[in-house]
Image (cartoon, rainbow, N blue to C red; front, side):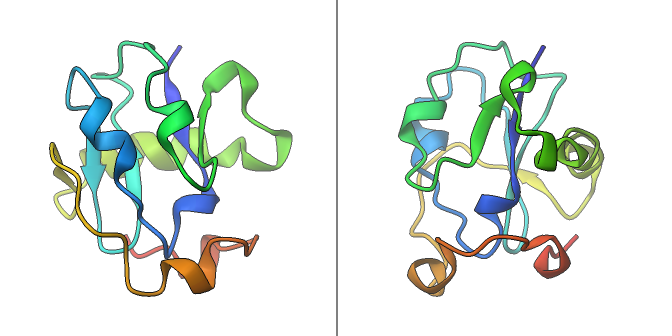
Length: 109
């Protein structure tokens, strides 16, 4: 099992989770973070760090976010997503987007 970043991260990209990850499994895109399923060790320390509750253990993923398992795996392999190891400021639009749902159409691959 692995952990999965859900649509809640899109257009926010808080990176609090990155600082606590012991294996550097987060990858950063233009407006989203993903977890590389091949690198994640299932430690769960990232879950409570996310201010928008965008990270779930795969087995706890809400039904309406199941599609994000495949998306996280795909994006982790994308040349547009680079490993991130240190916390950065969230996107300038984060406060505006943090409570919105159904943000998949906004994802920049």
